[in-house]
Length: 222
View 1: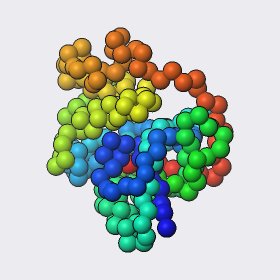
View 2: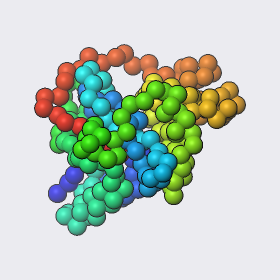
View 3: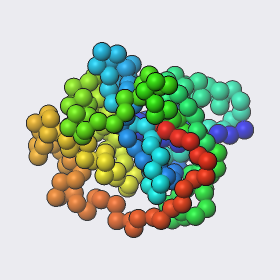
View 4: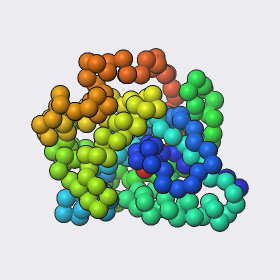
């Protein structure tokens, strides 16, 4: 027995459970958005944090890490129970195709689990929906909870995507807007300001992939 789970948020740098294999790659036709509330880790019910989920977007790719758990039903059950507690704001599990760098035509894996959320404020109490960049930045700059502050989550995601060689322009833009709110733009360590002139070469040099839409897929993270 074996299962694979795809992480595109905090799971990229902190899976938190014992894994047998980690593979860097991407899923098609989804992009990160910071439209989901977190009220128990990086925020509170009174001041919810914003964490990322996925939005369907034809032609997009979302880079992250796929993790494998092997070893029988008990080990798989323990890993899934941990993930379900951790990802409690995500109300769906979606099965997706997972691709490795260098092969955008044939999936490396099929049936990979990704924790997703329903983009509907009535059906999903954790769904915040989109907001202007400046408003999201102010919320992220000030929210905090038992596991730390919201801005650290964003900055760690920004760095994790840099570390795997596939930065996300949206994440960088939002992170730099948060730095403006905090009044520290231009005064942060280089690794926390990935879009600065000195780091221009860190942007992914891969040519955009022309990708087809996943038939019938429904998705939204971790």
